[in-house]
Length: 264
DNA sequence: GCGACAG
DNA sequence: ATCTTGTCGC
Image 1 (cartoon, rainbow, N blue to C red):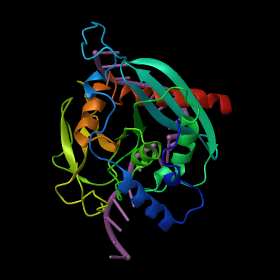
Image 2 (cartoon, rainbow, N blue to C red):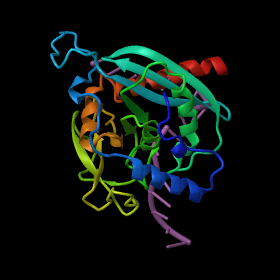
Image 3 (cartoon, chains in turn blue, red, brown):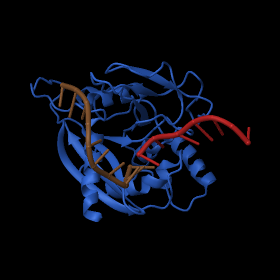
Image 4 (cartoon, rainbow, N blue to C red):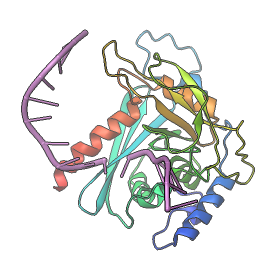
């Protein structure tokens, strides 16, 4: 995994203002339209029936990325899938430089994630991050930041909403339901990316809903880099299995916990 | 000062 | 994110 834009990588030791300035540069470089090397239809968790006739080539490589934490260190895990099959798993343990600050997550977790991505032998066609992409104050969340640095299409999948406003109430919706997340006053227009009340910066997506009681909250999906908000939700939908989180993320999450045991 | 905030 | 037992239900 080589960095196409190493100058935009999160560096330690920057002041808050410098971090925010760097995020604006990341957002200016980010592409929130489809610019994929593969057809979204070719992404799936596998086709037992072998009925997929869309091209001969192997399905795209999708990497799920997540972290677990130790004392002052982060364990970043990456699980790469091809049509639902795990083809590679790598992880890295890195020292943390900053505490968690809403809006500056990529400066805490970005470096450690790049450390893990450097261990990869395969070349993912898509990154799926645990956190926001365009749904961010400066339209440069973790998924956008790392996606831009590597110039790899990426998607942000968050379990809660950082900013923006859902078009409709998100409570108690059926599986598959989705509604746009629009920019609000806390979102800045950056580069060629507007932030008007009409701007869709992501989607609330109900990936799962069990018949029983506890209503499950939706996921908040947003473009990281080189994908539109619409395609981002479509891809997350295609990558969803029997659980709330998309399979790549769920497997990375489990692997992060599993590997963590060896360091504590 | 008030409110609000990914992991 | 993390600290944590039992418990309800498919």
